[in-house]
Image (cartoon, rainbow over all chains, first blue to last red):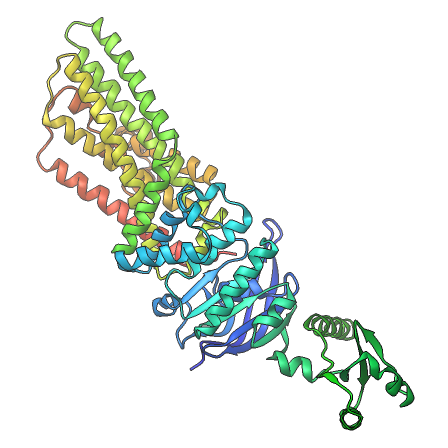
Length: 313
Length: 257
């Protein structure tokens, strides 16, 4: 059983008050998230990421298709008991303190009093909120609200975490801290699905990603699959004293600090050069496939999709 | 049950921190002060003045609070997006609506008790008699307030606070004049069967606040007809449950974009 199963999910909704138009947010997306997996949903603004999350959390209803959380409908209380959700730019009851707020959310999960007290203490500490635990939330900065948001998402120690743009509004320190929290949850075997504009974070945290463009999934796969299969060559890093040797072979190199990097397109060529370098007793610092960055991949897919749309119309 | 309690307590916490509630208490004190002064000019009528002003104050201020807070309660949850972190939790939408209703009812109950304490203190000051009917009257006002909250919640599930406020106020005013509306039936102009049917239809379907108003009996210390209290409680509870059920049905279908 997958943690999350989405099949042919469609959704459109009305906009405008006088002239009612319908906007199609999802055009039949399908993907699944395995238990214990960290899954990233990538997409531009309006791609359908938040709509997907809102359907998963029961805030809106599917227009078609099927959505299952641990084999249950998103409206099922059992499914709701197993998820933690952090909405994009979360808003909370400004008149409450973090402790009161977490007591409220914990109460909705029927968490026993003593256990809830301990859980709140733990979360306040984890998210560096202890100092402000008695300050009303109305006085919090955006970054602090994001921490409170993360705390409420974790109040029930959920099996599945749904995070909509969790890094938004955080400064570099906050981002690093949150990234570490997500990584530690990943280590604990939690299933995490999250969207982010910061592609380097997704690349670092996620096992698999789906690229969502204008309500359609254009690519799904593990980071390795997606990036390595688009490998544009191989890079061999040698110490700077190998410059002459490389030049004599008629190859080009690019300096990188105290080393040089030789780029070869073909794996066989790279293998041959490596053998020769070993024979010459040159120091090989690294050998890596030259990967495209997730950002490049995203832009490539986006351009391709836009071109197809224009070509089709 | 615990989830309803949790939502109710949170609603109570929000409402009780609203400064307007304290302004209302202050306003009632002024009203009672004025009634005592006016009453002192009359021969032996001071108690009547204090009860009349006091109960009118409790009713109007309570109903006003029910409309002001009640119509904005659900709307604000959606507008301020706090609902985004509540609906994903394991709470049924009907539990949320019921919790909201009970939370505000509890708040306005506490407010009413405080106002009643002021009224009783003033009655003691003017050496008036404290009767059990006084407390029955206060309970009837609480039923009126609770019914107003249910109406406010009902309208707020599909319209803005301003419109909901307008609709609720209109319904409250009509509901207080239903007996006058019914008395039209005895007039000549109501001879048309269509008009008769319309009057009777609205008389039976609209919330009859008049039935819950026993201020006159309290002021003049009159005896209530047998079974009146039970019937009125049954009517108010049934009407509230009906409104909350409709509100839930609307809220169940609501999507939060």
